[in-house]
Each structure stands twice: as structure tokens, then as C-alpha cells.
Length: 562
Ligand code: ADP
Ligand code: TPW
Ligand code: MG
Image 1 (tube, rainbow, N blue to C red):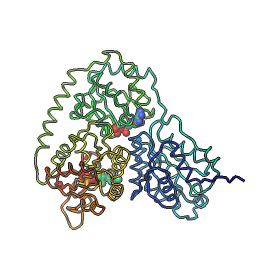
Image 2: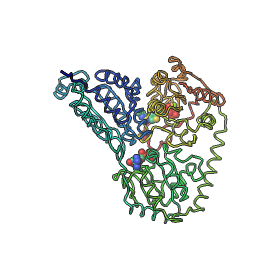
Image 3: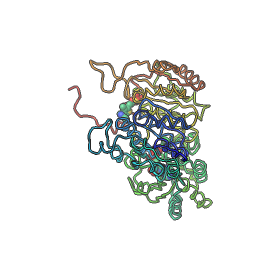
């Protein structure tokens, strides 16, 4: 008698991921997914084991952003799942495709709340924070469940998807033939969404009436990988552009049409603004208030129809995927339909020149101790001939100053705290970017921001990833405070030697206090392409509370010490 080959749920999950071209898993092992992780590795998937699920999830999310395929994060039940959930919610908020896969405890016990090991109704806990959440209860449903999760993560507006695998499903066996037949290869991962032709005409007509048009590029535009067409549209129309933080480098920051160094003027004076993959959320002051002229009319290109009219009325919505939309714009654009306005470009150029001069003076000063300007002068110098280095950025003042001072020249090279302004993404994003690209990463992080994920330097050393972490160490959240009788709410350990931490794992630690040493440390570390941590001493008085967001910081009218 011919013996039946048997397989089980864990094998099927690995087969289903492989069949769909997924080659990496980011996770933390334990009951009930240890064997699944081992098996994945044995079957040729790359498994990156982290110290905390939040960083594993952040790595998966940024991998999804960079590759247009869902990044996979694997966690254990209840607490492991909850640790990963912050990253899942952050991915959804930022429109990054990822799938959080967690093992879960016995359904019968969980549903009656009988107190199982790591008991939690994970699927329902995930729902409010995910684009979709599914549970697989039978091994024969693994194929369809994985396919559905992949589609949900990547199609339309990308986001985080939760996939619950019960311990039972992972260990249940079924015969090889049935199992094989149950697998599903996803067809057309992210179907094109071609915008209606009349929406394109309407938008072009509005742009043609503009005296002072402006294009704002968001991370949706960077995600879409339509780099050439976006550049062609901007250069053909001559419209100035402004990149949102993670869209920096989509066109090089030194492009003559970049209005980045004249941001307030460009936004305040523009009469028609074309948003491409950028939301009118808090990062653009909701399109209201003193930054805006009040009479601005908008074109908005976005894949999500419900994004339109979310904050301001949109005169010309273009709903579709950016790649198809920009290609449609280029086809429909008539010669000279939109002609660049020399006066408008000149107005921007003059403001740019003035601001750049002011910035240059600040960058060239040599205060002792260093401030953010003199430290970032070193970063600029070190990155000058290395446009392919990924720059990850996490912190408050550290984030604001780096964004404004460090130019980017290639698309999708800048990865940062994003839509939520969340601290602690840096080590996960740095690992994800290094794993996906094999390229060097420079993570520029505040000392507080580093603390949320710092243990992942062990992960970086264990996998020998080319990640250089640069900590702007000003002894605190926003800045360092004088030590009083008790540590202040925003103060951190004074003069901490973060560089010694990485030495515990064989990485290179640097402790620098002046600009020339910082340039040298950065060049050495980046050229070595090995794990390194540069502890850069910044004047504790240099930062401002809440960075550039002082207006969002409610202050008590009563003195705390009264
Ligand atoms: P930023 O923070 O850079 O301003 P946001 O995250 O606010 O960018 O906006 C990104 C927008 O891009 C979201 O509204 C999302 O729906 C949209 N988007 C993401 N991918 C695509 C795509 N491929 N085509 C069209 N729109 C997209
Ligand atoms: C998950 C609140 C915003 S910025 C910040 C915190 C704690 C730290 C800023 O200090 P850092 O940078 O990193 O040293 P710098 O250069 O200004 O000194 N918890 C989460 N997210 C946020 N945003 C906070 C708390 C916060
Ligand atoms: Mg700090």
C-alpha cells in the first residue's frame, strides 16, 4: 500500500509564503510559533530574530514600503502579539503594507475566558488598528487565508493586516495532496486603479489656470515607484515642488524646481496645489491657518476616494494609483498647456537663496559643545558622495533639523517617524532597510528615541548589518535639564556613554565631541560597512521643547512649582 505523505499547518504557512514570493520573516520566537520560524529558515526563508516585537514589526512595515510586497512579522500569542500591534497600527497609519502573523491559544478556552497560557482574543483586538484581520481555524484554509492577507495588505491603500493562526492549525496534519491543492498564488498583487479620464482633464484645466501652482509630493508618491514619470511631469510643466519628509529624494533635493528651502512662501503664496500621495493632515496644518492663503484650490491624486475632501474641499480629485495617474497626466497634457511662470519661480528662487545663506552661516559656526547645526554639517559632509545610503531618522529636534539640513538625492532613501510622529522606529526601520537592500544605513536618532528600541543593536551586530547609528545625545527628551532633587520628566542620564553599549556585542563605538571628529567617525564607520554606534555629544541647551511642534504642546497656565 502506498503511504500517504503528511504535512501540517506550519509547513503549509511556509509553502504559502514562498509561493507568493515572500522571502523574509521578522519576528520573535516562542510558543506556538518556534517551530514555524525554524521551519521557515530550513526552507530557505530569511528569518531575522529581534529582541522586541515592535521593532520586528517596524522592520516588516518598512520592508513593505520599500518593496511593495507585505513585510511579514511573526510573533507569539497575547503579549508578543500586543507588542507587535503598535507596529501594525503604525503601518496602517502610514499606508505601509505588512502582515502581522501571530500564533494564538486554544479557541475554546480563549472564548470562554478560562485562563489559557497567553490568552487573548487577538483577532478582535487587532481589528481597530488594522486594515483587515483574519483568523485561520483549519489547515486547509491556510492557502486562501495567506492569499487574502497579502491582497488586503498591498491592494488599494496599503496597510497592516493581522493574520491569526491558532496553535491547533499549526500542528494539525493533513495529507500532502490536499494541502498542495489548497495553496493559492495571488494574481495581480496590487491591481492598477486607472483614474477616470475626465478627472485628469479637470485637473489639468485647473492647473492651467494657476498663476502660482505647487506640487506637494508625499510618501504615497515615493511608494508608487513612478519616479521617472513624476519627474517628467514636474519638469515638463515647470511647476515647483515640495517633498514631504519621506518623499525627499524622489527628485533630488538640489533640483532647481525644489521649493523645499522656501516652504512657507511656496505654500502660503500658491493658488493651486497638486497633492500627489500626500494627505492634508497635521503635517500640512490641515490646509488651514496662517501657513495657507485660505483661497488655495487643490488637485489631489490619491488611491483612496475617502481621502478626498477630508480637510479642505478638493476642486479636482484624481482617484487612482499614482503610477497610472501620472502616466495619464503625461499622455493628456497638451504642448504648452501648462507653462512655467518665470515670476513665480523667481520669487521662490530668491527666498530659497536668502534662506540657504542664513542656513549656511549657522552650519558653519563652531560652537562648543556642538549643536544640531554643527553636527549635521558633519553628516552632510560624510554623506556628500554616498547618495545611496539610507537615512533613518527618529527623535524630535533630531528629526526636524536632520530633515531640513540633510539633502536626499535618491528616492525612498529617507525613512522616519512619519504620520504618527512615533518614537522608536529607528532600529526596526534600519534593520528592515539593510535587509531588503543590502545597502548601508545611517540611523540618526535622538537619545530618547534610541531608548525605545536600542536593544536591537544586538540584532544588528548578530546579523552583521551595515547599520551605523548616530545618537544626538543632548541628555534628554528635547533637551537636557539641570539636575534637580529628582530627575525631571524630560531629562535623561547625563553624559551617557551609549557607544559602550555596542561594544558589548563587538560593534564599533565612537564618542565624539567636535565636528571634525564626527566627520571622521562617520566616514570610517560608513566605509567599514559594519555595525557601529556614534555617541555625538550635543549641547543640552540646543533643542527646543516639542521640536517644531511647540504650537501643539498645551502648557499649564499655573506654574508646576507654585
Ligand atoms: P506624507 O506623510 O508624505 O504627506 P501621507 O502618508 O500623508 O504622505 O499620504 C500618503 C497617501 O498616499 C495616502 O493618502 C495613500 O492613500 C496614498 N497612496 C499610497 N499609495 C498610493 C498609490 N500607489 N497610488 C495612489 N495613492 C497612494
Ligand atoms: C511612542 C513623545 C516626542 S519626541 C520624544 C518623545 C518621547 C523624544 C525626543 O527626544 P530625543 O530627540 O529623541 O532625544 P531630541 O533631539 O529632541 O532631544 N512615545 C512615543 N512617541 C512619542 N512621540 C512620544 C512618546 C515624544
Ligand atoms: Mg534628546
